Each structure stands twice: as C-alpha cells, then as structure tokens.
Length: 226
Image (tube, rainbow, N blue to C red; front, side, top):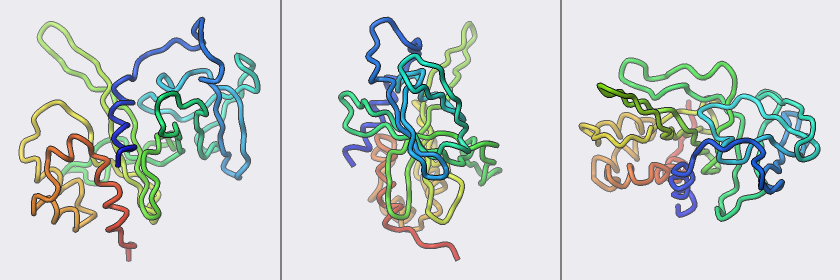
C-alpha cells in the first residue's frame, strides 16, 4: 500500500523536460522492454521518465547507444517497457501496452470506448486477478480572462478476464457532490467494495487521498465472469 501511494508524488512532479539536456546522465534514458513475441530488448529512449509519461503514448523510440539512431516500436509490437534508473523512487517505472478506456464512465456511457491503439500505462499494482495502472490527463480550467492547463491523473483497473482497462477515478481538486454515490458507481463491478462504502469502511477522504487503496481489495474480491 505504501508503494502505491507514491504514485501521487510521482505525478506531482510531472513537467516538460527537454530531451537530452546538457548535463543528463545517460542511464536516465536507459530502458528495457519485452516484445509481443517475448523477445527482450534494451537501449536508450529519447526522453527521461518524467517527460515520457504523457497523456497517451502509443509508440516508443529506442536506440542501441545513447543519442544514437532510433528505431520506433508501436504499442502492438512492444508489450512492456521499463526505465532501469529509478532514482529515489523504489517503485519500478514499468509501462505496459494496454487497451484502455479513453474517458471516465458516466451514467450515459457506462463503458466508454477504448483508444484505437493500446497505450502505455504505468503499472502501479500487479495482483493475481487485477492490475492497476495510471496515466496523466490534461485538465483545463477556463476563466473570464485566462485558461489554465494542468496535468492530473486517471487511474485504471484491469481484471484478468477482461481485455480493456477500466477507468475508475480521475483526480480533481473540486468538490464532488454525493461522493459516496460516485464511489459506488465507479466500484460497482465489486459488490463487496460497494458494501464497504455503504458501511463507511471505505470513506471518501481515504479514497481521494489514495485511490490505489482499492486495488488490493479488487484483487481479493475478484470473481470470474460467467
């Protein structure tokens, strides 16, 4: 649980970093990957971790040497990729190619369409029955005189009998009316979690502080689809 909460810290430092800055350490760009056929590859990416994690990524460029000529791998060709330099963060920077919903479910569209291509999502929980992923999303606030664009994040779960990752929370600083009702809607695939919300065993504050707290519970309560 402690490691998953680190995702909030990671996303807080998302920023635009120029590729190959003057004093860069080549190991910050060192990545490994697994192709769809199981072949392992290794090399150097064009961007460091914080710049790599954009709202959606459907391809990865890899060079045999630092600043060398790159080869592009699509999200259909590359199954997973991870940065070997983790810095102060003890959680591996692992990305998996996943079919994922483009937007949050709502009452009018309970099953939003996935992206046309798999996207690389950061793996934050790897359970036997459920995996958890996260990706940043652009958030726009429009005012009378100016508009502000910031990155927030969307968090997903993927059950072992599904091929599409489901979005179950998008971080927001705004007040969410009827928060318990909202939680029960997003967690409806897991009746035990809904019951925990009703019994106040899982509170809105706990959920908003760390939405990943429900992922181990999803893994525990998972039941195969009939």
